Image (cartoon, rainbow, N blue to C red; front, side, top):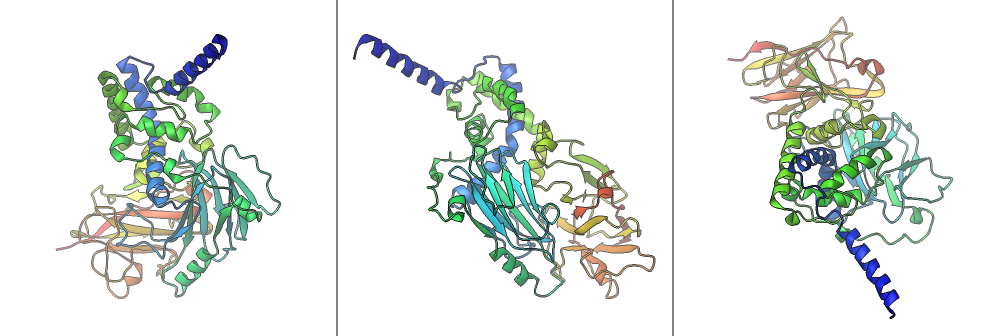
Length: 467
C-alpha cells in the first residue's frame, strides 16, 4: 500500500473513531449548565423511559412483539399491577415492532358497544385512534408504518397510521356490562377476531426477517434514574425520526452526551459533571412529582384533569405536563375519548373515610355526566393504595349502565358507604372500604359541552356519621 492510500485510510479511521466517540464525553465542563440541561433532558425523556421500561417487561423479555395479548375479563381487586385501573372495559394490547416492515391490524365490526384502539408512539403521543369515535363500528383494516417506510399501500387498507418511531403500543378497550349475562362470551368472540400480521404476510409473501430482541439495551431502573438515563435515551432517539421542532433541543442536549445512537457510559464522566447531571435529575423529579395545577384544577372536591395526553400537535412543547401525566397514569386517553375527574375529598374538603361516614352524591337532572352517542359514564372507588376493594356484592363501579333508580324529578342519588343502605336503595349503592378511599368518575365519549368548560361533578356530601 502506498503512502497516500495509507494516509487516506488513517484519516478515515480517525474520522470514524471521532464520530463514534462523539457524545461519549459531555461537551460542557460547566456544572451549572450540565445540571440545567440534565433537568430539561430528563423531563423530556421521562415518558420515553417509562414507555421503554414497560415495553421491556411486556414485549422485549418475552419476545412478544406483533401479537395481541387479551385480558380475560374486567379488572377487579385481584389486579394490582397498575393503580386506579378501570372497571368498565376489557383490554387487549399489542406491541408493534416496525423495524423490518409495516404491520397490518384487522378488527371485526363492533357496533353494539363502545370500543377504541389507541396507538401510542415512543414519545407516548397518542398518534392515532380507531374505534367508536373516530372510525365507526364497521370492520376495518389498518396499516401501521414506521417513520422511514416507503411501501405502496394496498387498496384493501382502510386507514394508514404512521408512527414517528419504530415501536408502537396498540391498546384496545372494549366496554362490558357485567350486569348483562353473556357479555364476557361476546367480548371473547370479538378478541378472537382481532388479527395482526406483517404486511408481507398480508400480501401473501414470506414475512421479512424480524430484528432480534437481544439488540435492546438491558433496562435497569436504577440506571434509568441516574446519569445512565442518557444511555437509554440515546438508544431510543436512534429508533425515532427526530421532529424538526425538536432538533435544536436535541442539539442542546448533546452538551451532556445526548444524541441518536451515541455511545455513552456514565462511568466515563468526571465526578463533578456526573454529580451535576444527577442533581438535574433530582430537579426534574421535583417538577414531575409536584406538578401543581399543570394537570388541572380542583373544584367541589374533584380534580378536573385537562388535556394531558394527545397527539404531537396537541402536546407539542408541553414536556412537564407529559412527564407528570406519565408518572400519574401512563397511556392515558385523549380528553375527547375519556374524561376522568378524580376526587380525594368530600365537599367539605375532608378526606374520605368509610369507617367514619356514609356519603351521598346527588346529581340534579341537569348535572348528570353528559356523554355523547355511544358513550357512557361510571364512578369507581379505590382504597388508600389506589386499588379496588372486595365487597359483598362484587360491585366496584356504578354508572348509567347500572340498574339505577332515579328520583321522580330525574335527579339521581348514589350512596357511597361501607354498609348496605337497605334493600330499597341497594341498586344505587357503591360499596366503600372500611377506611380511606377515593373516587374516579370516567366519562367515555364526553359530549362537547363536558369539555368546554370542563364538567365538574357535584361535591360528595356526608350523609351520616357512623358510630
